[in-house]
Length: 131
Image (cartoon, rainbow, N blue to C red; front, side, top):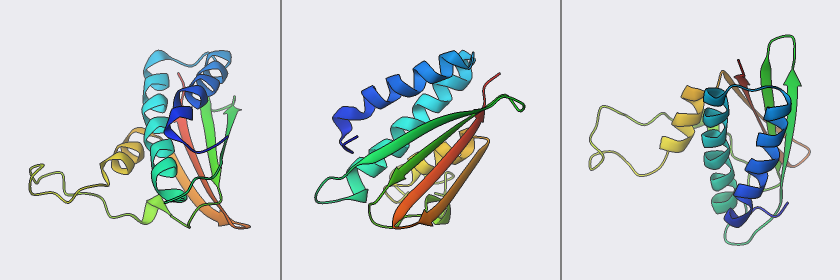
């Protein structure tokens, strides 16, 4: 799908439908939806800037561990969000550098987050317990 902000609700709907099939709890689904929005917004705004490109989103289910596994794949500029330094949340909004809070939020709300660069693609996987 084209990596533009206008497609975020469509992708979220796709993921939510898969989560419903997994009998995902409301709290977990809300956390996943926030993570989706943050990750997709970053891909849309930065991966291909100033142009646009595509993003693929895959949803899987680890039934044994009751975990949703969501993978994002784009061919934008290499970016490993796990290497991004966490913002100093003890500072006021005025004192803190702009950016980084979305990634920080995803890292804190998901159970796991993995990144790899593979065959010219950024591949980011998040995992969240769904019950």
